[in-house]
Amino acid sequence: MTSRSGAPVVVGVDGSRSALDAVRVAAREAADRHRPLRVVHAFIWPLFDIPLGPTPGGPPDGGLRHQAELIVADAVAEAGKVAPELTVTGQVVDGASTPVLLTESRDAALLVLGTRGLGGFAGLLIGSAAVQVSARAGCPVLVVRGEARADGPVLVGVDGSALSTEALGFAFAEAAQRDTGLLAVHAWLTPAPIGPGDVLPLVYDVAAIAAEEERVLAEALAGWSARYPDVPVTRRLVSGAAARVLVEESKAAQLTVVGAHGRSALGGMLLGSVSHAVLHHAHSPLAIVRHGTA
Image (cartoon, rainbow, N blue to C red; front, side, top):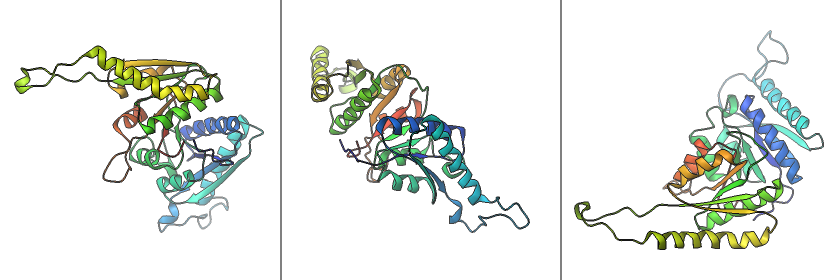
């Protein structure tokens, strides 16, 4: 896992209630990690040929630029209420939301986003921009959605892949930091019967398949359990679609963690089907870990 020593927690704001919820969560995350918090507002209007300052004859503190500065100032103040000792900085950054956030993520320990946007982050979540940010960010992305709760385990999806290993590492670290348990879920599907005209079914041994899937889960957890011996781990092997299983399990979790399995002709710009579905339907805050960012 990458330490990113000294890197801040970054939160995107736009003046919406959802963004302030994200600021509160980001402030707690930064304080728990002993890292500074950076508040960023993407200011898209310089890309258009419109006035940014006060209108002629209007109040001197009017205009789009001043409004953006107020959004950042309010967010910085809100973070200070949550964690008074936290070092918090804020900045209005010219540009559209997705490229601004991706640039910020390169030097961040964690990028925190809300679930609905206004202004500089209009339409960011939940839609194509959120998928692009989560799939391409240079650090893990925490989406503040669902019910924020202090109890319940950290939930993580496990599939035995290298990316799943990185998501596991992030999840174990979160569970240790939150002083809670880890629920590791591995979902698998029974092979569908096939044959000419569906007459000759494929023969398979369900017990043998389940045993193999149990081995995959146990091996994925072994190293991390040794590294975090104080984190209690619950293993859950479930026959069913991974996205549906994770969404259901997220109801009782304080955090859900998935890997960003992006595979497309666009070079990884898209999330995999599981992480995409969980992003849209999880009942708890969701951390999305991309390869090389944990």
